[in-house]
Amino acid sequence: MAEKVKDVMTAGVVAVRPDASLVEAAQLMRTQNIGDVVVADGQDVIGVLTDRDITVRAIAEGTDPMTVSAQAVCTRNPVTVTPEDRLATAVALMREHAVRRLPVVENGLPVGVVSLGDVAEVEDPASALADISRAEPDTRGDA
Image (tube, rainbow, N blue to C red; front, side, top):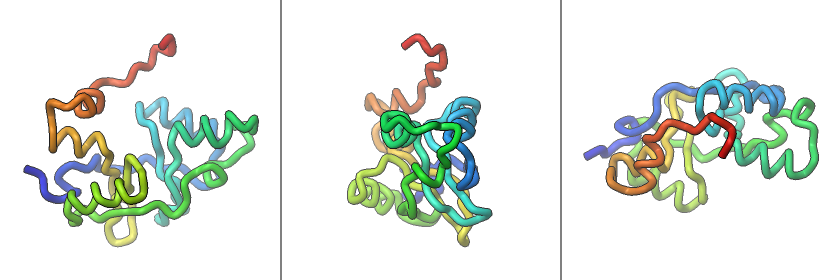
């Protein structure tokens, strides 16, 4: 059974600059079939931007996604873990901060992301959340 974050995390980071527009971030999410990106200034993690952040914090407020930056909408100063942290620590942090994903940082550099779905796939592979996490995203746009 997985014991450390490195055993379940998704390696690699999809990141945008703080000044990237929400449209740029959303297009990157679509291309990569992901629901979040790390907002990074060079090697420094500034925040995490999710598709829900774009929808709820920007579009629903009537802002122009072409002119609003990722930094303006992202969750700033996200809680992070290291690859060597215990998986139980990551789960406890997700609970405590009510988040579904944590950037994984090693020596100050973002190296991956661990999500609730990653944990579910390992802890309870038969769960609905694990099934959903393994499924390919529906990109048809007719849902």
